[in-house]
Image 1: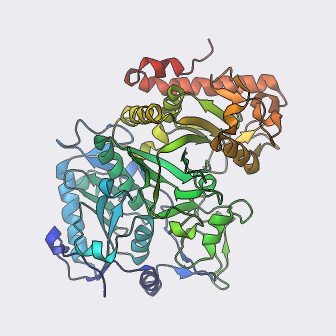
Image 2: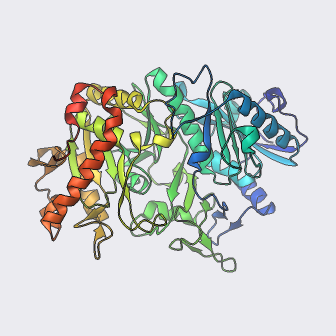
Image 3: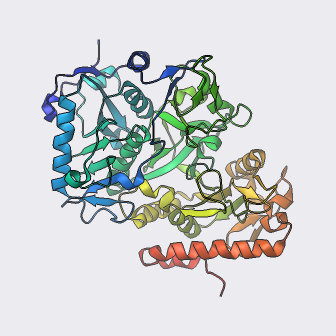
Length: 534
């Protein structure tokens, strides 16, 4: 029997003759997806699906309704674009009409957030079974007893076949992600990329939690054997998921968390990992999930005869993904949460080859780098990129932050100072030159892990440090088991002058980017800010 809330779709103003499937488990949803022709099974068990033309988020198609609730609370601009209440009303009417015409709907009642006092009840309505499986995998799953009295606070309606009308709906294209914080309704249409649902819930919590004094974070988190929590901030491709899935530490989560007075808690009950070039050697825990029933693989190439998958083939997408329940990773937190953190790690993949593999930050420097949210793209990941390109994503998650960055930055600084947290900047990018130079390789993961382990067990604090002349942070001079040369990025370059020139370019980019925040931070943070060479 399907566990179903007493609050029906009809109670929410949705009239439909569709057959409704409520809170189905993994196996029934996989069966439904295959029956509907939505995907196929690989030989080892995962469901393999394609998302069509959208293989990532449609950032320019996301809108927030601009009304009395949001006018003064949302940071309006390129990231948070406004939609009028009138346009949303038209969009909602058309979405509800579309729901009424569906033959089948899948409904999941879920929690966003694992700490009961800070979670939000989310109902997700899907036309595709695999989308319902995805969001059920990614969010926190209520018990059967909790479902009976489940009252949705927010509702997400996800219809990939819906085509928006820019003139009628006030959007940009046939694709739309429209968020209404007053009506607590999110409408996603014209895209089959499932990550839009996940990030919508993240956006909800990023909006709600700061008002309660809780810090929402785009990060992974784990716990050491001594009960010490570490938080890893980082944009896509920096190693956030990889480095937190460490067999010697207990995983809290890989992507989205809250930091309350008493805990670091996962927003989710699953993981969403990049699959491209995944290997058993480098990432054994995540690789093992590609061999299990219950994993969903998006845009992973599969031989339809043998059902063998090829994780190295990027012909469908560079951003191929796998979603799986968090307990597919060995040694995960039973309650999906842990103590407040002792260490914070900011991850960056520096394609300029300028940053050291690890540096220690003051609280003021930590806020500076948090607001900067630096990483760099290289050729191969985006069409037309032949030189490294700096990316500054505020708070390491700008697309998902509805409020002004200073709200999150000040919250973080407050919590760092309150908890006496040690902060580190870790470069998982390239060493010895720019990524685009011949023969320049990515930082060996063994080096990164060795430095991280020394930071997390406290031994790195005992090392001798030098002050980096470009960035002002502390860099260790020697660490046991690590070649000292790699700790000094300038020494890694064959041409030291070329390093200095490249470093000056990167510092200037930091300076230019931070200008937007200078009026929103205190003097301590301004004094920690970088200064470009005259």
